[in-house]
Image: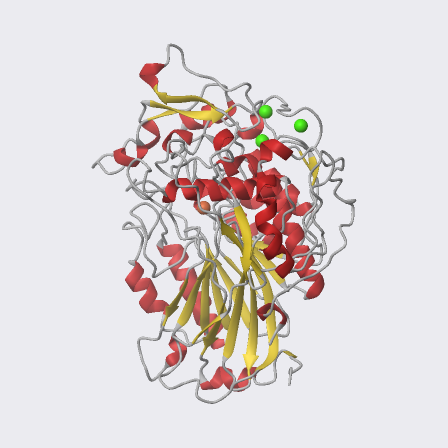
Length: 610
Ligand SMILES: [Ca+2]
Ligand SMILES: [Ca+2]
Ligand SMILES: [Ca+2]
Ligand SMILES: [Fe+2]
């Protein structure tokens, strides 16, 4: 078995960070605790998870630590503790009451087994034993990080704060930089055990297309000092490192790991939903809170108004309050004067798709541009390819699947789409990869061939239909996987070959969840060559490692509470939960006879257990 297919428990040095001073009477949990000990003791410490009781005042460092006993979901899982039956249903914005009513509690549960999936293989395959023979490639995916400036006047809180759309308001938006920092530290710990060849961020890196969000995102990965605060400087809980607005030093991704960026709808549209206009642009950098109509229902009429529609103040967060109280939200008729945020901030300006790509050159991590080149910027074309490992014939096709601004507004702009230029480019890259005998992985913000709501799936205005795209993809034997975010889901979907005589025309669609919604997980991938010259994609979900009371731990409570609120049958409008499932799997991929012969000697030999 390979390393990531077993429970991983790694002790790591915390570098800059010193030990966690468990002052204030909190119990010190052994950092060397094994998984089973943690499972057994978890129930007893749940009371300590009330962020109001403990806060994060125990830290007197410049950085936030993680639990050094890093474990993937193969070793332990985060299991929400059900909300007591006597508890009332809460609105998502009632963050201060979550703990009191038992929302957001969790414990460690047993590890999640790997499901071995043979969906792409011919009938009868699997009768004879097959070994993992050589390691070809190892990487991680992060997705839908949604680094957020919660104090922006150009928010969309109105659509989410009472429980309508889960992406429009989530209390986790207070703590996005800190959660990414904990994920980065967790990746660094795993990397000590076995090196990642690269990492990929699958889009929606930032929440609202803002310059300050982009800088926070890149500065966390670079390991810079983070001031996660906009407008006026706030300190909701007096003192350093004890609230969501406090400055902290990010750990930074290990400089040895190159990482690549995919374009998402939130990276280039207002709240992932609308191309901006002058009103939205002026609002971002001003004090007046955004006033929009119901863009959700407006967009279903024949002539949607989009950013020109008015009627509701979208609200913002009062950055002086410990739980991020919402201000300036609701129907405009309820306001005598238009509501404002505490202060304007020029760094809230929007980044265009070009500026988003250009900013990726302004980092200290590798590679410059994180996949994008000057020609991508010149042509405002956000698709590219890269070959992660010189001695492995595999290329990654990074595809910009966001809608064109020119597409008409049909239920907003969060759909997946391709125009002719991008489709032609995709086909030429698939043709080249096939001709050159390279395995291929497509990385795009959204998946294909999976169920969607009416707002986020394949655009009816795309150059071709989703069915036509899928049919084309099934022409390339060397395409082994399509990896994506966007649905905030960990789903894994087989796309078996439509032609039984050629199983190699199938591929896998592998999704990565969001760091914003429960379960806040990323994924690792290991591609191995098997003894019968099939390959296996071994993929593992990972929860960022947290210590009690840290911002990332508080965010986990918030994420679980929000999921419980949306899953409740008492929710007005009914339960609208999303899948909180984790998925660990070994996905077996059949190759063409030519590729089987070609890869027979590739990869680093895996020492056999027996
Ligand atoms: Ca903030
Ligand atoms: Ca502020
Ligand atoms: Ca503080
Ligand atoms: Fe997203």
